[in-house]
Length: 206
Image (cartoon, rainbow, N blue to C red; front, side, top):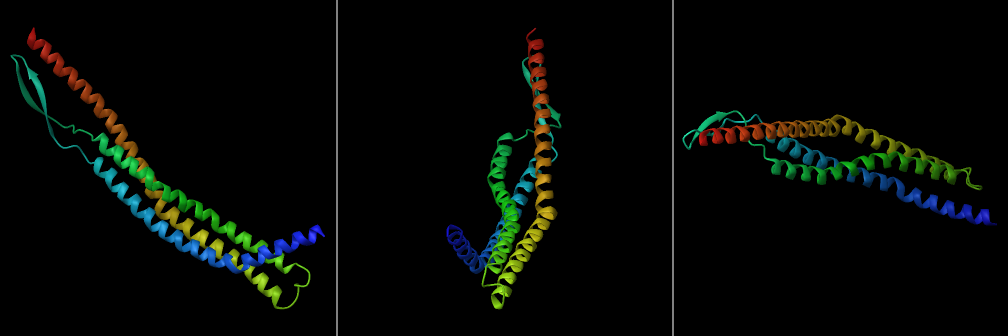
């Protein structure tokens, strides 16, 4: 008795999935397409901003203390790294990268929904009284169509991820690493230049 009630509940759930699962997979695919375009656009913007910050330094003038109480300008090849600008870009990148996380999550959902459709269709087909006639073909057709739909969408979006998004994110991470290393180098240079100015100043006083 309990098993019959349980089976009837499962059959109702599976028949409900038969009506809504394939349209739901298609709608999810359209949403994934929109997320993909937004993620690519935002990642390209971040990449351009990081590359702009990593452009070669322009010639800057350096103020050097000259004995006698005056200051002299000397040319230096180092430019000030705008760390605040970098932090703004990094915050923007962290916010927009949530779109990529959602995109990756949807890729994993497509085959799972396809498997759910397969199991649901086979469960309907194997119930007593529905092993012959049109019901069998409808149930098996639903099982196979949902599986194919889910796997095809997962493969397409995973291919796009591997070709476009993953290399783009890798380039962004590489540019960030370059910027952070160059900023550390500049801080060391700036520290030594400051020490030289102080040393020149002390020698002038003497």
